[in-house]
Length: 430
Image 1 (spheres, rainbow, N blue to C red):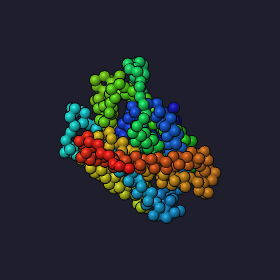
Image 2: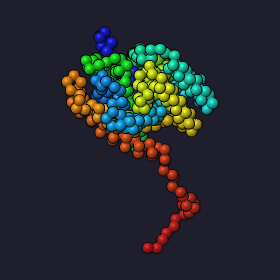
Image 3: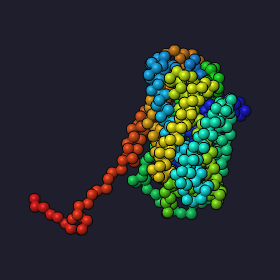
Image 4: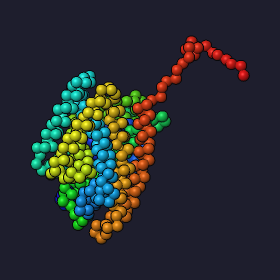
């Protein structure tokens, strides 16, 4: 167990950033809306994520240079820049959901009434400036982040497990009657996008280099990927099943439009304190994802333009700061529209699916080069599952684009004529 704990490191950072507030809220929404239908989706997404993370870890260990430098050497610098820019944009959307979740986690602590727009903006500005300060002040950034993510993942797993046991030890007090007809499938797509996060998997290659892994560390990479991603899938499953047990088929359905609504699933264990505890959990998830998520975009973008890929370089830190500020700006613009907090988070989470095919294709391309022989070779089973993930990501990207377009452009209500409004009937001769 001690050796396993030592091996776990880079992938636990990926798991922690993926299991952020958006993932918690989206999985809760899926459990309340679709019930047990979400279980095979989580299992499939977890298997695909394990393969992608393991592939990226192996690439980071066997290649001498970083991923974008390897792509630039083979396909040209513009291709590397396109990959870096794609991931940077995805990070901005994902980061906006972290900012919105931060507001959603803090508002219930101040009462039932939502905070004003100015107060929300002030919270986001202070939080982002604090994170930027931490970014530049920490001397050994990787080691600090790894230790913190291990602690946060352990705490989140224990908390959700205890609540899971408490809920399933009590019988239901109502008969389950629910239908999946005319449901909004966007939360389901968002949950797939957060569990099968190729953007996070792509960053695993950079974390492997920060860890100092080489071609001989295949066993450590395998253990790290399996344990960390299985933990991610298990916690997501517990959240979904908890929400299913509490909300699915309830005679008085809850819209789950606020963090306070979602917090009701913790009531079996924590009672009246459920809202406060859940909000603190959302805050912890948001803060744990805040820095690492922005680091993903900043590091890969810096690497794509040839300015360095190590956390000890300046450009990754500068571009990480820009990612933080862009995410904050997108969140403020979204909050200005005064939409549902949970709904805004789900749209941002679902939009992250759109760039997955390009990132998956880049990993598969680098993993199938002929020079990867002997101990540097990538097992064919991993490549096959990764290719399956690429195909799945293409389907998801298409479905997500259609769903998000429909959400942002709802059909206009039919215009009634004057005669119809007065209840008169007109006839015409054939």
